[in-house]
Length: 291
Figure (cartoon, rainbow, N blue to C red):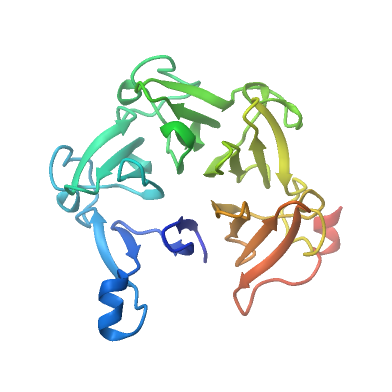
């Protein structure tokens, strides 16, 4: 099953990341090394996590730290930081790739709802099973606070706020903070600052534009595999756990139940499958599901 997606923009390759107690970073060998063997052979190295469940290790080597349910990852190339959702510890941690150390970034380890800590330091705020993280223009760090049904944002000054969720409406075309999210699980941000949100509970992907308005980007709100080749908002999607945006603005969706990766390309917003498992569903939902 496909859980998470991310891109290495230095080579524009997308990588699929499985759940693991060890956060593993897939690196493409540098061209100087590739010239030695004549092949672009990828290698896997451990960036964070000792393989033991726990929460200790901040301030030390990232590979000696304990994690508990790491899920979403985001790399900030401007600061060389890797953000890790340490989901079951209710925190987001940051790995300083240049020296290999790890530190707390957001969340104090205590689960809480209703955006507890907004307006204060991110490391003192409370998160609830954060599942996704993304870095946007200006160094803004967005967190899919899944158990709190919100998307939080950490500003450059280190304070945290709610960017989307906390409202009552599932409709699109409204201010993001007036919208209701159910289980936001994955995030992606494009170069224009559009924030894409995969919501497991509403079977959809929404986008928050820079003006703060949230609209539906993909999915009908019905949990099934819908057809390719039509507008993404007219086709069903099912349990999107991973999102990524490439340099051309293509948005990739990793659907765990449908066992496929799908692509929504600008400007036509048409949904297409680009990768699927051999046993992935290809038919319309049964009559009971359509009712």
